[in-house]
Length: 478
Image (cartoon, rainbow, N blue to C red; front, side, top):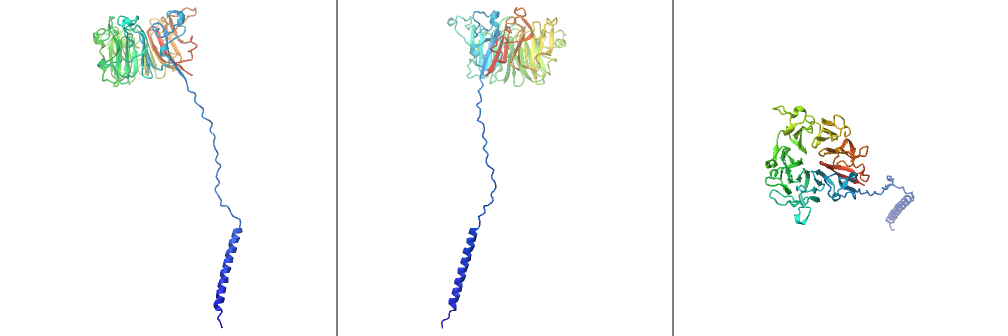
């Protein structure tokens, strides 16, 4: 008999395997039939696109630059009204535009007796005017080639040009000179370049009336470096009527030239000036008066002080030995009335002075017989020496100041131009009185350019003046 147990065991194992497979299939089928769940996802905020407005194209500002002259004596490169001469009242109803300087931005401007200097913002030096004493510094021409020459072969009436022939101490032409300052004396000029070198040209007149540039030389036609100042780091130069001052980086002051009392070629050699109580930070000069301000804000004056232009008290003017009141000081004298006032500019005419302080106030002092310090005319106006005081009309609103020999001009911060003093040479323009007659003296400040509607809204930013004319640099922003 055959044993069947192995077969039954194999059948049971096969049935068990089939059962397990069926259970697995059923389980998978049920899982497949269950609804699928979506995994929770973090909400994402929709991206909002910010639409920026299109950039506006900035309108490029157009700036126009012009230089105007008011008065007599510098009718160079200007067009007078048709049919009128320079001494006709109607020719002075409007300022004269100097055509050759149109478009030039001015850094500084200075006026001599009959010539002028202009330093542009790109450090070029321009000059023009009457050149019989070689103060213009360019445009030499042989006499036979130009009938307007004087005996020294220089064009008398010289148009605007760039001064470029600067000579070093060896007499060689220096290339690419950059001028940072320039000042005009009566018959000479002085300039300072970016390397601290000082140049002079023209001529100086001593107290006897003799013209001298240096020992044996009457007139110097081209800018010549001052030998005695070579190697010193000069930071400022100024010019008076017939003298110069310079200031170095150590606060030392040097002077050369003539006062109204001195003669001799030796006076044209720069010499140090002593007598200050500290380091000098600024120097100024006008007519025959010299000024210095120290870092302690102490003000010193020397030179001509006879008409109150030196702002000295009676005691300060007295000689310490004799007690005699002095009209001309040979050494610096401390000025108590101006020290500690924060002055940043001083300008002096023949008998009066102005100053501008750090708060933009105008200070005036000296004589007022022609209205040159802007005080009303009264019994005290003539022959009286006024002490320094802030002008009531110009408190905290002044940008720049200048004095001519007997007149004054002020630029306000708003760009308007105001003048007072002598108008004998039309240096304040043509100003009629109530009867229509020409004014020769202006005691109350008047606004210049008031007749020039084309330029009334222009902004003035630089000034210069001498005895019979005023120079004004203006700009118009459109």
